[in-house]
Amino acid sequence: MAQELFPSSFKCDCGHESHFFENTVKEMKRMSQNKKVRLGDDSADNHHTIVFYRGQVIHVICPNLGECIISDFE
Ligand SMILES: [Zn+2]
Image (cartoon, rainbow, N blue to C red; front, top):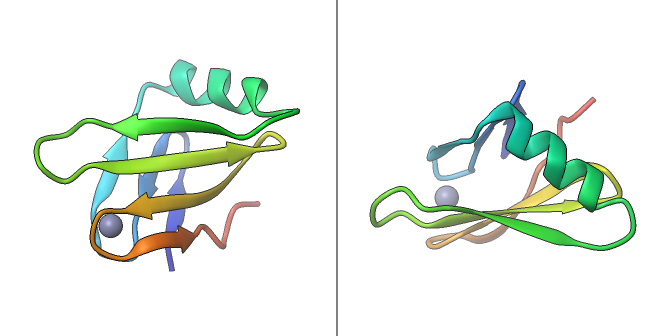
């Protein structure tokens, strides 16, 4: 299962890890209170997108696997 790795990284089902600045993730969570927001991982050729909603990370969109639910946030 995809996972949120505190404080500001995410691991996809495919094993890819996306790393962001902690302040970036905090801002995305704040912005996602009333709407879905997306945060792109621009690393090289393995482009993942993290989706936030209602202050939580809900899934990661994987270039290989599609939408992966992030299951074990607390
Ligand atoms: Zn992936």
